[in-house]
Image (cartoon, rainbow, N blue to C red):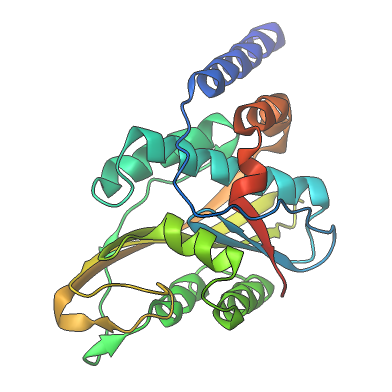
Length: 258
């Protein structure tokens, strides 16, 4: 393949991605009120609630990289929500979630879920999240993930960030959410370590990460993945994503102070 052929192929992929983004329909979940938008500071540890996800950043990312991560993961969630039931059709939901991320520049392995096995009669998910991420995250990534979870736990039930995450991640007895830690590789590539969970249970869930689930009547699945962002690709679709999200980025992304 000649360099000319490669360039033609690259341009076609960009065109295909732009058409894909343009054709996406985004869900607008019902909420009692919306949080304000967020502008995370560059080169500092930080975190944010992104609809049904919590994303934490090490101090190696700049503001543009953080914005790209937040916008792309929100786009993938809202598009998958529109296409499939987030809580009842999770396999297809994650398949489309992955497709959206791939179209905008993420390299995403397929999600492979395994049943969560725990000891004792009851368990909380915050511990399972850390145990899952520990296998793939660096020390700094694990530190910011723990800090983000702790920050969310410290907030009162009616805080706008709590309402945003809880209303987006689960209903009374079903749920689907993600906790991610982002850093930069030695090659200056944005890397996201993600823990994905979905569950059914017999009891009404309140604060999902800290709820005491009954082991005997809860079925919970988990998956961990390492994703990398091709920023050359994302740069070509960034403005299209911003246009597609419109004010949804302000409504469904809010900062967590860590």
